[in-house]
Image (cartoon, rainbow, N blue to C red):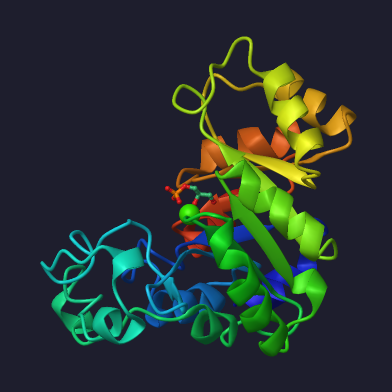
Length: 258
Ligand code: G3P
Ligand code: CA
């Protein structure tokens, strides 16, 4: 099985389950996160917002239209009770009917010893105090927690209040940043917000030189979202520290198959 094979391989790549094992279960739900652990993920990634009543909920979009059973509540203008009354599983497959949108605490509670959670903040830094409280109460060790965000002020605030948490800034080239010239702007932002690293879309236009520039400046490099083995292999060749994927088991087995 997966465990025995893991022991035999010297350097297994670090795989992060994107929104959980979201190829096989509804994204950002407990079934998806539990399945990610069963599929041998090293970490889970989830998307989080602050609700109207100051709780933290796991959902990707700013409203519930796509994943909330045909409703359209704006997440930040809704209470946790309103959001958890919705069905966050049926849209994916009927067998997941009745699955609730989890809180950050519920997602963190699935993380086994030695595994990590990548907490992606989709809203602004107003979430940080509640997030720090929930993560501290989770019982997870500091080194099990990585904060990621496209919002530079969120990373800056996290590194200010809790430097022990790794925090990485996200950007997708072509949208948030031009590819060329892009590196100087990336490095300036990373320094400014005291980020530990940078995590980019695994864009086909990126190359080893780009990743080396990030790493030579003293920052970690990570990438997302990779569901095919050749792309995973290419970015691992550049020295990415993690590969975020919707399909952790498929990528793990595919990489091992050589
Ligand atoms: O891991 C980062 C990645 O999840 C960012 O993109 O849209 O899937 O949240 P998105
Ligand atoms: Ca995400």
